[in-house]
Length: 261
Ligand code: F6R
Image (cartoon, rainbow, N blue to C red; front, side):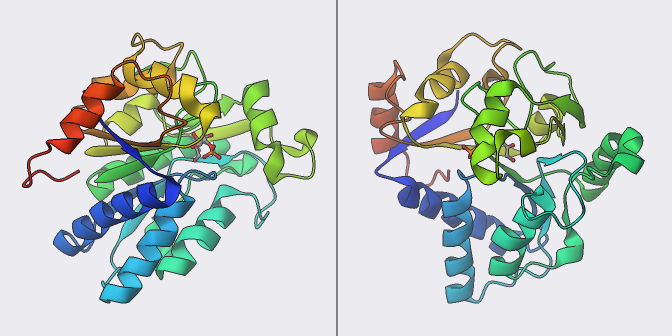
């Protein structure tokens, strides 16, 4: 089962996740990071940027693969995930831009963009740690409800709920693209460690479904139950619908000193 860690706030979650990622980079300087976008991972990137600067960690060989991208946004659009990853991750951390990959959402090459991305991930040796947020409808990556557990990187249609949720990044809901290209659930499950973060009451139901609900394509986040190494970092509000919360707190309080996240 997932290790569920309830933290005081998103900054505390960011510190814990960043500590784990920094240790990974120290042990494996060309580590492959699975990068999520959206609001959730921002405290992780901020904490990691501070930590690597303070410790002088060499991140020049770190590789990265983003989870997803919108289809059809003009190149350089500030809300394209390529632009977001550059702004929030590559620049603050000082990563090497050519080693950081985002699925290609350009229409001209979209038919083979998914297969190209799968090939690139496989050739990298696979993702060491995959950061994940979760949508209010339970999506991880942009695998909306009904996505196959066997799915790989491909084009999906965003749900109306997701377009509403993401309208805050655009001038209006109509400006949120209809389609995206996203790693599949099977792609995500191939990463060696999944680090899922969720904050706020709005995520409580989706999070409880992912961690404790039936494993079902109707709830894509529940795919994490099929993975042997999952860490879930949540604040009290996002944890509020977990039934086994007392056990998670108990297990974390008694975590063996030698065991990492
Ligand atoms: C982003 C992604 C999505 C988000 C999810 C939550 O790359 O794949 O699954 O993690 O939509 O978004 P936020 O973090 O903005 O609440």
